Length: 416
Ligand SMILES: Cc1cc2nc3c(=O)[nH]c(=O)nc-3n(C[C@H](O)[C@H](O)[C@H](O)COP(=O)(O)OP(=O)(O)OC[C@H]3O[C@@H](n4cnc5c(N)ncnc54)[C@H](O)[C@@H]3O)c2cc1C
Image (cartoon, rainbow, N blue to C red; front, side, top):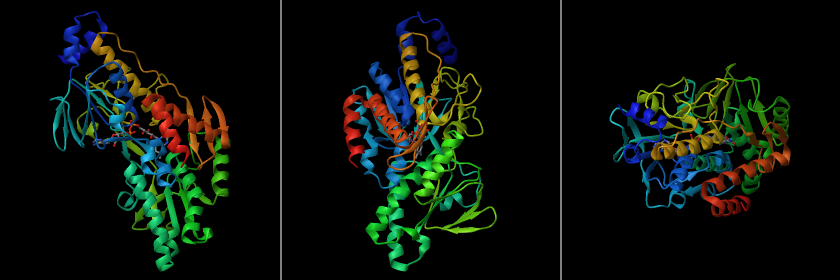
C-alpha cells in the first residue's frame, strides 16, 4: 500500500503537498559515515527534520584511518563531532547501536530504544570479510574505526616496548594481510613511522620486519599496472616486504600460516583483505548479493521496499555497465548526496533523480608525502599524487562542513 503510494507520488508530483509531507514525516538515518553524513547535510539544508542514529557521537574519516593507525596524528584529527555539523533543532542525534531493522513494522531496533520510520536511510557501511580463513577473525586486528586505529597504533608501540623486555624479535614483525587500498596505505604509513619508533626505543631499524601478504599476483588492483610497479618499488625501498601470490591459509595467536605451510611469527597481525556489507540488511530479509549488499533501484531505494534508501558500502547499485558500484568513500559520498536530494524531492512532491556515479579516480597514499593513482583517468604518482590525495580530503571536509571545518581540520592535518 505504502509502496504504491510512494511510486504514485513520484510520478504524479503535483498531488496534494500535505499528504506527501505526512508520509515522509519520520526520517531515520542509520550510520554517520560518508553516505549517512552527506544525506543528513542535504536534509538539514532542505529544512527536513530527521533522526540520525550512530554508534559514536562523532563522524570519523575512514579513508584516513591508516594515518591514525600509523601514528601520524592524534585520533581527534580524524573525527568531527556530529553535532558540529548537524546543528539545527530538527536534526536529532541518537548515540546507540543498531541491532535490527524490522522492515515489516518499519522500526529500527537499537540496544537502548526502538525508532519508527516512514523513510529509512541505511548507511551502516561495512564489516571485515574473512573468507572463512581459520583463526583469522580471532587472531587479527582490523582497521575499521577510530578506536581500532588507535588500538593498532598502541599495539605496535607496545610490541616495541616488549622487545626491550625480552629481546624476542617476533615482536618487531608486523604482518598486514591484503594489498588493496587499505593494506597498501597502511604499509605506507608504517614504513614512515617505524624509523621514528626505532629512534624512540633505541632499536635497530633492520630488526623490524614489515610484511604485506597478498593472495593475488598483484597489489592495488584499482590502479594501472605501471603505477603498481611504482608503488611496489617505493614501499620496498622504504623497507617493506610485499609478498604477492601468497595465500594466508590459517592464523593462530601471533602466527600467520601461508600456502606452503610456512609459519610467519609476528607480534602484530592486521587483516585488510576484504569487506562485506553490514549484515543487518540480509538479516532483515532484503535482497542481497554475495557480499551482503542490498539491491537498490536507480533512485537508491531498496528493490524490496521503496521506503528504505541504501547508500555506501551497504548498497548493491549496478551502473549502466552492469557492474556493482565499488565500496569506496567516493561512491558513498555521492550516494549520500543523491539520497538526501531524493528524500527532499519525495517530501516536496518533486520527481526523484536517478543516481549517476561519477568516477573521479583512485589515489593511494604511500606514506606521508607520496602516492600513486589516477585523477579522472590521468595517471599521477609521487608528490603530485600525495598532494592530489590531500586535496580530496579538503574537498570532502568542505562539502561536509563548509570553509570553517575545512580550514580547521586541514590545519590539524597539516601540522601533525
Ligand atoms: C584505511 C582505509 C582507507 C581507505 N581509503 C579510501 C580511499 O582512499 N578512497 C576511497 O574512496 N575509499 C577508501 N576507503 C573505503 C571507504 O572508507 C569506505 O568505502 C567508506 O567508508 C564507506 O562509507 P559508508 O558511509 O558506507 O560507511 P562508513 O564510512 O563505514 O560509515 C558507517 C558508519 O556506521 C556506523 N555503524 C556501523 N554499524 C553500526 C551499528 N550497528 N550501529 C550504529 N552505528 C553503526 C559506523 O560507526 C560508521 O560511523 C578506505 C577504507 C579504509 C578502512
